[in-house]
Image 1 (cartoon, helix red, strand yellow):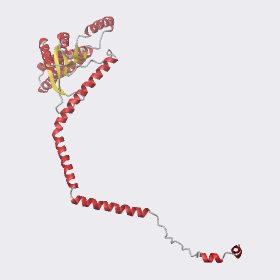
Image 2: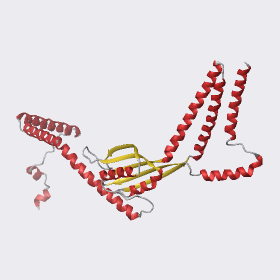
Image 3: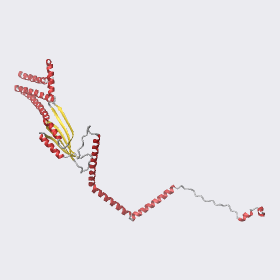
Image 4: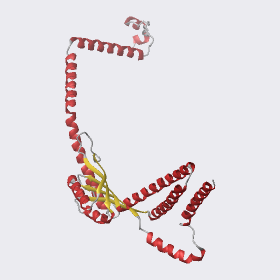
Length: 341
């Protein structure tokens, strides 16, 4: 019983000592050696800067000869011991083109792994191919601190594994053995996981990831930037518009060819409809119907005209009942004085 308690006490002491070792390896220092610690710390930091760096490169190229450019890329990959991690080839149509027969251009996207020591020569070799570099982006990530911290954790876990192995050899009861084995298996799993992370970081450091995109073009465009003058950009815009219009005309002609059978059928139907209409207009039935329609229109117009005309009362002429004097009566009415004269 006493031996079992002693083993448990030793196990607890081991766990506490492991925690104190891990904390003391990064934070604790002796007050009497402040100057030496600061000097060593500065030296170590200056040495660690850039020691573990992960680089990534993103490149975009345009080419007129797609097959030749791909062959050059493959030769460059083989020459510098690189390899293709991922590739994706697709096709696309430039802006301003449409239709099922519009020309499609190819595009390929690579994810390459290039040995870091050969990266500079690899990029220079790519610049020598028959293609125009549109963009280039180089990034770097310093993982030195993360790498060192992971190494320290692995070292602590190794020490813990050794002590647990010693305790397992001294254990006498099944309960103690199961408890120590469970702790030991967790320690080994954590150590292996951290070791895998270190190996992954080492691989990323040793082989730089290069994201390469190559696009086929009918005409290479100038790279836009602050160094391009206004007139150069204007010239580029005019040329682009001409090419877009040229492709649009091609697509329009091709569309007409596709639509020609439908246009012919529509034209024949229109001619047939016009012929039937002309024949129908020559029939007696059509002429009689038109005559009846004209008579109905005339009658309707007369009715409308009568409705609009105002109704006026009939005025009979007044007869002049005054009797006109005759010639004999005129002589009688003449005064006698006038007769003597």
